[in-house]
Amino acid sequence: MQRQPTAQRRGRAHKGAALLIVLWVLVLLSIILTNFAITVSTNARVAANAADAAELQAIAEGGVEHAIAVLSMDTRGVDSSADAWYFSESEFQNVTLGAGTYTLDAFDANVESSGHRPGIEDEASKLNLRTATREKLQTLGGLTPEQIDALLDWQDGDAETNPLGAESSTYRALPENPHPAKDRPLDTVVELQLLNAFDPTVLWGEDLNSNGILDPAEDDGDANPPNDNRDGVLDRGILPYVTVWSNDMNKTADGKDRVNINEASEEELKASIPSLTDEEAKAIVEHRDSSRFEKVGELLKVKKPKKEEEKTDESQQNGEQESSDTSGNTNQEAPQSTQNNAGDSGEQRENMFSRERVKQIIGFCKIDNEPAKAGRININTAPVRVLKTVPGIDEQRAQAILLARNEGRSFETIAGLLDVAGISEENFIEASEEITVKSDQFFVRSTARIEGVKRLAVANAVIDRSAQPIKILYWNAE
Image (cartoon, rainbow, N blue to C red):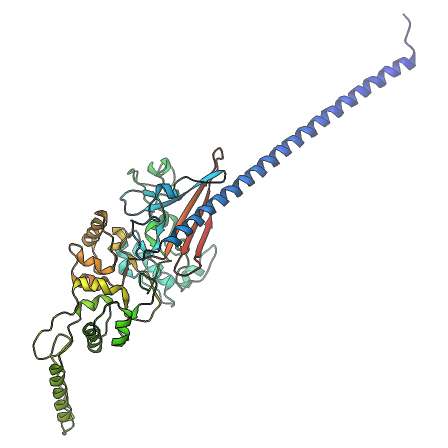
């Protein structure tokens, strides 16, 4: 057998090596191309997700702008559940914008369970934590004595500690993130998480994901966090019932400054209160000269003006008293007058204003020169749990207010409470500085969706329409 020439054998070896090199190159190229394809695909997905996220956020922000437009067009002067901003499926549910939709979702605190409605939340329907007293916080419920004391200490502006509260010494001793007590009002409700004795369940209850839906894990006892009572009802914590934003402007329904009944002259009263008569203006001035208005509801106590002969008798009596005082009897105290705003010589004068007349004029009146008062509760929108924190309004009266609203009644002035069963004139007077029928601050939650995209985008905003242009007081994107 003849052997192949060496050159031929070497040629074949070179060919084999070349083939192996080519195969390795192809393998390497395949790996590179595969990695490149994966990278391109990943980048494409990332870019697509980023584009989806940006589009979803833009849609959610569009929902907030829609809410601003609706609130801007609402000029009725009274805010209630009858308004378009409060509830409208066609206006706020699955509204198409671009490639997706948004829904404005409000928690309906007037429903016993975890009710929702397509609409906007009224911040004046909630208890303002900046102004809430201990008694109001206790009445609201959902807070322990330790939490109430901690909240009061956090905002009170001094270093004195309430019996169960906490001041800077407590917060500076924290192992993580030590800090002083704020000693100023809350900036947001979620700031409560910084306070001693507070945890997320105080704010959100069982709804720690804040989606407003009773998820399976929120109704299974201790099987999965959060712990819950497995009662089939979503505990939303105190979040739906509290605010730091409500601030009622001291203006009339048409946006004019109210008149200060403790200072205005008779002429100023008549110029500011439509159809106010000379006699009514005189009666207001006489009342406040005798007893300053502490609450605007005290208009119900104003008596008709004294007659000229009554004033003459009074003047003579005062002159005789002064003469007696200057005749050397300086050490003897003047006898206490038995006269008051009710009358002069034992004759009781009639009330100047009927309930119906108070309804007509009370919206034009104020008792001080403050431009606004934080924390007034809107009796047209507040739930029972919040209404009963108002002085003069207990659980039964709060239920009666809700019943009146459910029957279709909308309170045009705060004096409309006088028509509610169980609410006396004294109850109304006690409540009158703490309530309103108009709102200027609103919470908007806009949730955006795109069909085929798993993720959502949520924009939360607090809107203030008390001045133009409308302001956004708070913004949070999820």
